[in-house]
Image 1 (tube, one colour):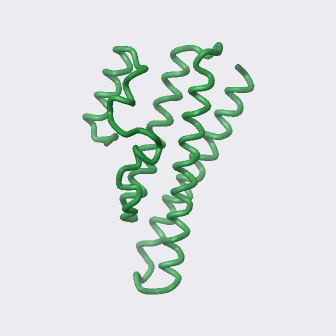
Image 2 (cartoon, helix red, strand yellow):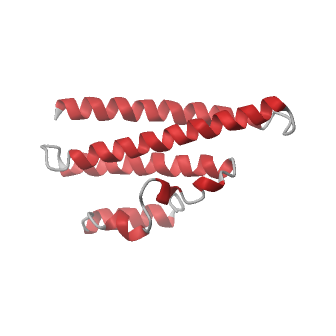
Length: 140
């Protein structure tokens, strides 16, 4: 369990740092002239970073799925799932800010074609938490 926690936390911290870097790049983008070649290259670089972030989110989800049968507590598992969903939502918002059409449905990019696939393995308490988060507008 310790190796899972260390590995997962390290990957989560990397994803958080990447999302912060992308946030800074998006803020910087607003000060650039849209027609400059630098602005186009900058946008392309941000798109690549967002793709890397989406892949990182998928890796975190896969690590959680692998640890399902191990000795990680249900509370810790739920907390990790919430943290992954927050990152996924943030990646979606960043992609939307750049009008990345291929990310318009980031759920399908990450292998989630519909809402039901997200809640299949949740218990009632987790579903209620998911509903609250959705109602607050943090998820799509």
